[in-house]
Length: 362
Image (cartoon, rainbow, N blue to C red; front, side, top):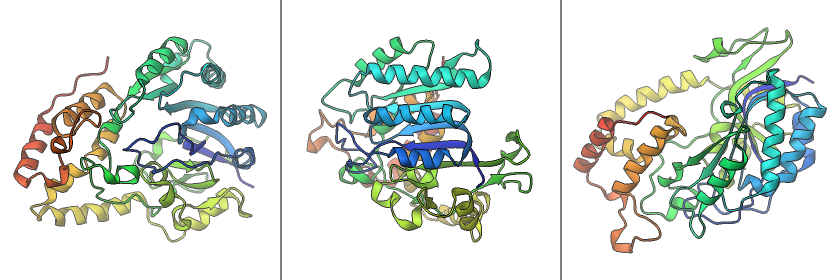
């Protein structure tokens, strides 16, 4: 059985959550947590992990599983080089702090350099967007900043200020309509001694071992043990993510993850080929006078590309303050339905955004 090096791996630890945010794109929380058996079977097929992202639900509700994952990294001698965890900040957990410190120490060992600055390798995000109501997540933000100094970079996350019209957000009048559903429809790119990925970044990936199998696409492991492309799990509801045609395999299948990926790839095009076809469709859409309106409704994609930098925070706040209602203060008459904005106003909005100057991250 061939082991895989994952360039970027997102692990859904749990679908439990203490709150039920109106904008949650995953939909209603579920009483499901990843099992130790799933973790074991997955890591037995893993060689190394470049970037690990723990997600949920609320990942701090699965601290035992998070800790067990680390134990197996040591036991199976699997190196890890980056970690990111995003929490809703509902609780301030001492146990979570200790686990993050343990991961930080493990990553430091993998770099073989005691002087490495861990703020570049471990990131803890606390969601402080307007839809997290009934508590103050900024308390947790300040707590984790203090407790994890020297072990991780702790940052505020405000991406949720611009919700998508999926999951719980389907009922929000200010939510942005999806333009294209993120489906499992592209090839999983692999770098090995026999194959090169059709990826513009493939030269940045290097094999440490002759027999190494390097998956360069962003991948995801769900709480149910399903393995799929990261774009499917990170942009869709639980129900869509669980559809049989939206995951490649389950860790409990008789076929290995590697063999399942090879089988899946047989009739799939690369993302470059798919993007080329998409550009052709986009050029056709540009002839439609509603094209710019659709661009604005899909603005979340641009926010996601910017990432968690200060520029992203400025960008989201700029749009939120100008066009999106506050769920606590707004009355029905104050809520702006983004889908009812006239086309000429969309033109003005896009011009404002294009001219908006981001401040540089300190």
